[in-house]
Length: 140
Image 1 (cartoon, rainbow, N blue to C red):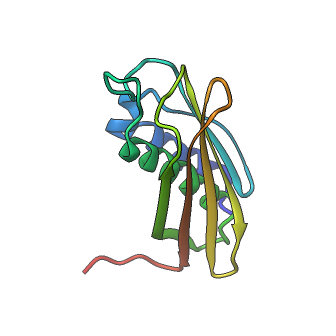
Image 2: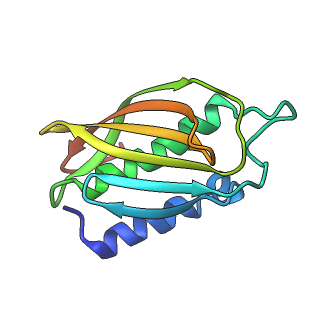
Image 3: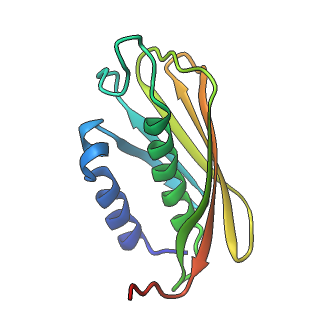
């Protein structure tokens, strides 16, 4: 498992990514294999029709699933995403949105499901992301 200091650094980096910072994303809770994110009702993530874009849902689910994968990674291994599927179920959003991500299965990789819901608890999007656990990442 990633130690608390490394996890706090990862959470801080994600919260300060330019687009996620613009959306005012906050990581509200994490525990081994799980993560919860929150975006206040600023209206920055919806279009003039009151709908959320699939790309916004995708980046939110990826952020949550990455943190969930990090909380459950073995020491010295890093999660690298290699597959992502996001389904936008109800694009109309009311108020703030909440993202919950949780580990489902895997020994050498992690399958993580993420859900995006609005303030009323309506399911907005559902995503599954797969992460490979690698020992070292080198860019040539």
